[in-house]
Length: 177
Image (cartoon, rainbow, N blue to C red; front, side, top):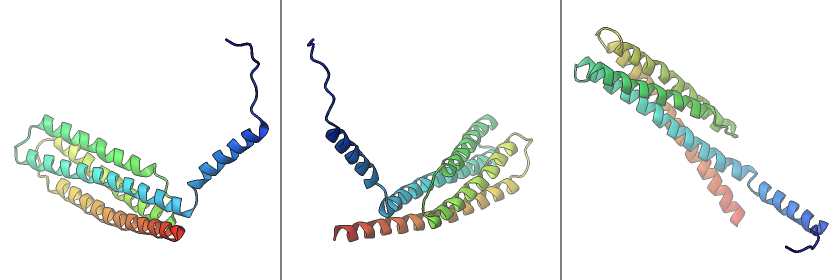
């Protein structure tokens, strides 16, 4: 070990380091970065809608199989229990995303509504499975309606995501030229 005293860096180097750090942090800001972030967030919304759609489809298959006597009650209950968790997770995932553009955030809101509306029918399917055998028509109709709502929301999200990506690419081309 040496007995040299610790030397402080010159103030000009500290100032330069701070300026460079600030410039690097701000480089990712601005309209193009926001659109890119919105496109990524919309892709995440799409993924969560896929999860909710899978949950609805799983519940529908389980109800149909149980109604036909091809699936044991315990297995159907466990399967639909997992589907309820997936649908609820999709709602949470969509609800926690922040999107800057007003139009894209409106699409996220529609997706959140569709995903939220799907949780009830999936949970109702689980309730139906726990009751004495009865016709599954009402449960299946509710699941079909939820699937339609999710499909509509997915289409809107995909269109908004494509627009956000196109705007980002156009901005990048303008900046490059």
